[in-house]
Image 1 (cartoon, rainbow, N blue to C red):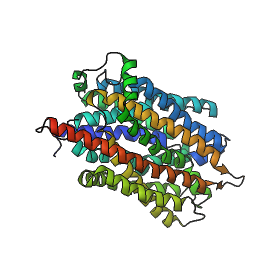
Image 2: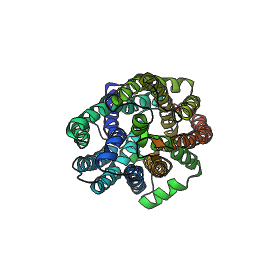
Image 3: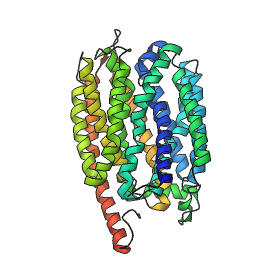
Image 4: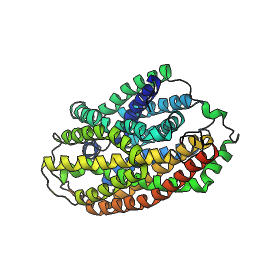
Amino acid sequence: MKFTPYQKFVVAVLAFLQFTVVLDFMILSPLGAILLKELNVSTKQFGAVVSAYAFSASAAGILAAGFADKFDRKKLLLFFYSGFVLGTFLCGIAPSYEFLFVARMVTGLFGGVIGSISFAIIADLFPFQARGRVMGFVMTAFSASQVLGIPLGLYLSNHWGWHAPFLMIVAVSIAVGVLIAVRLQPINEHLKTPSDGNALRHLLKTLAAPRYAWAFAATMLLAVGGFMLMPFGSTFSVYNLGISLEKLPMVYVATGVASFIAGPLLGRLSDSIGKYPMFCIGSSLGIALVLYYCSLGLTPLGIVIVLNIILFIAITARMVSAQALSSAVPDAGDRGAFMSINSSLQQLAGGVASSVAGFIVVQTPKGPLEHYEELGYVVAGAMLITVILMFKVNLLVKAKLGAAKAVVPSVAPSAE
């Protein structure tokens, strides 16, 4: 299908919005080596800072779920995005570890819900057969944050301190917020679908739906890999692989460019060959790379870049296909609540994973991390179990779309 100019605008603005939210989360990883030294914190404390965002985001997702289908999604998006900008600003002026910890909680409280609202908007405005392509474009936010945001963030932190990247994100986010307020049309079609008037009952009904449980479980395990490896990625690269802080941005730029190109292509491919087959391909490649990468010692820069490129392409394939497939699970009247709960459980699992990683990995007095290889085994195991869970989700989606065709043959497969 061809997108209208407005649909193209929606995809672009959601991708840019996700860029700011993802960058805010991902910037902690490359700043890890700096923060461990500047704030004089341990790996456990750093893992707790990452977890603070995740746990508060998880709580916000549950609290917002009951109301997610009762408001215009544009208004809901602007409310939470404003809170996210405030939290990021607090990170940008944090004078101590304790202040930063609280600031990350505020950021997570608002930022953690934004993704679920964005994906609900995508499911509202785009048919299932095109969602892989849309997700592929929106997911380029992860790549763009590496190509543009993280290197720039490292540059700013090296010259003006670790607060500077957060203030940069605030400036960009304000511009995005104004654009959404001015150009995005109201998104309220879901309000025409009969829904339980009581927010708590709506939340409990969505939580209790048996067919939603498989998607929730898969999403939780899907978060384990990123939240476990990402917080200590830069520290591992610097102290274990031997990549200097000055050359570290080269790794992020190279992998980001590759993922930026691969995202839309993988999205189109997942629409062509199927979301679940694409997820299996990405997972198989990811498991092999994680097991190998986490066992490495001193490694030449070129090899580190190549391995990171392949790994991030595998991760992109998993994320794009999983999000596109999961978007077809909920009914229209439950879509906002489902996405909020899904996001909440993802953040909760990520918070637990970050905390566990902080206990598994130990930084030696000289700098190198120990037990990173064991961390790789845990991540690979989680990825394998996710493949099994997503198989069940795929069967549920096929049955649902098939039932929709049988009831109304003239309706497109996207009319879930």
